[in-house]
Image (cartoon, rainbow, N blue to C red; front, side):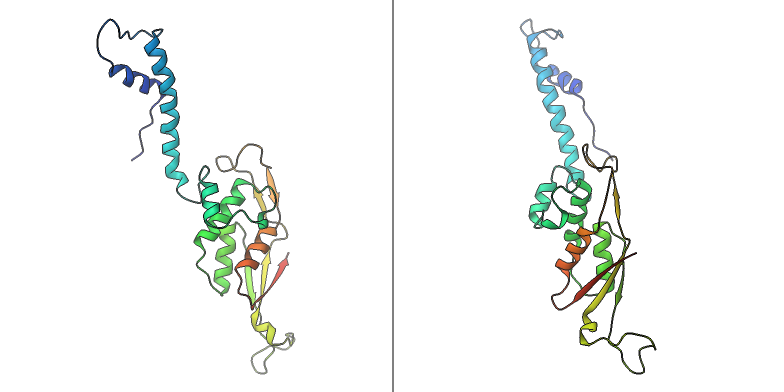
Length: 198
């Protein structure tokens, strides 16, 4: 069920219907009371629209007006997104941090990256072991137990989307700085991340 949408005219008519009947309460369009009601009705229409937007703003993936509150709750904005991130990039960071439950698996890194707007694959390395490794694998040391390779496209393009982006934003942005910065910040301290682009 959708919420009812009321126009300024609907509010003006409702206000006029609440007036008492009599000569001092004219209902003509050019009467002073009607002009006051028309001015108030525009304010009520704006408030009604904003109240309906509050429903979609309550969710991080579709927020616009409450984006600063979501960001401050989650420790954003931070240097990862650069000096002027788009609304979509800011939302992606909010969603990624909000949905982040922590982890140390390949699936965790893949899901976290997906929430940021990046499609990646992850490879976990291990040192060479007789009987388990293949001929030609690198020898490596103990650090290879804690090394992950993050494979991503050379440039991940974030395109302008009507309804999600705002006027004045670039039609497309491409970089992987947010991916590298965010994954580095959530990776456990004893791990090494290798970012490989193709």
